[in-house]
Image 1 (cartoon, rainbow, N blue to C red):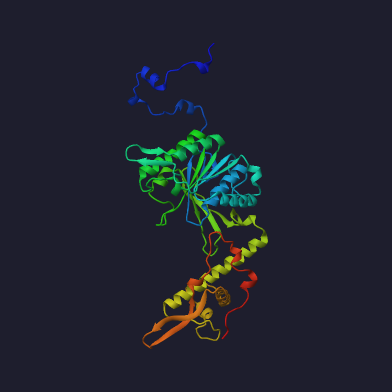
Image 2 (cartoon, one colour):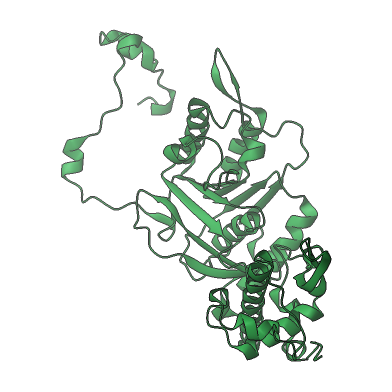
Length: 407
């Protein structure tokens, strides 16, 4: 008997012609309903439970400084190490993190920090995690577009496809759209064609893709046309939910075709990794709670101060003054019920931080004199980096030290 693999077979096109089917009459792929009738249907499997469906492109969006790159790299590390991601079950397997945003030095730093937070190390995931940086490459787009032929896969796409095949990756994180998509993001056809190119990778390589993108300036959870959301079946939105806690983060489902929306997952940025509060030591959680409360009270004090100065009704930092700020603020709606004692502590903190001072407010033209009072010093407020440990703002002992002038 001849070897089956050695038998010369007619091409698909030749076989179709022999059946009287021309190229123009080629049928669409049709589901085998008879086979379906004999099978029990299964729900869509998830790579990250509830959030990232398998064999799909999921769009991950978030404002600058919300740690999208850290999120994507940590996903890849947790899958490679077969560890939960922020307490959520994630499928285990080889992963690839492709970034055009950060270089190898930064990726190395983050990877070690993430491994430490997750309870593993780089040695244990050698061969399971692949990290590729194409930052600075002049041609790192995955596809190009022209008016005649439409989308054309670029050299980087061919390299990506070959790397997926060589590493047997099951999760690929692409960071990010701004570098990898060279088309017009307001052109629905180009956006859809690009996502379909990634869907082809998913289908051919048993793959799940997370595509990182920025929101637009209008405040939408994606940039460009609505085609990004229309083309994908799943979207995750990464946010900084509390301005009083600069390290607080949450992620939620922006679009879900295969799962209920559900509640957001709360976590925080800590030491270049993403962690849940419950995974931190108790003393650190206590310190963070003190800091968050102090930030809230500071913000309420400044809101009261801004409202009074807007009304040209100055207040004083002097305890004996009739318009002593904490006394006046206690009854204001902007204080949201904060007591005079708490407002005094907030004023003390703000003085120490150089965030408030006594100075010129406005010119009283009717009386021909300058009016002074307590005011916010915006130019000297300390900056809060997206990657700043909130504990460094002020220690609890410093918060309780008085600095307000009493007279």
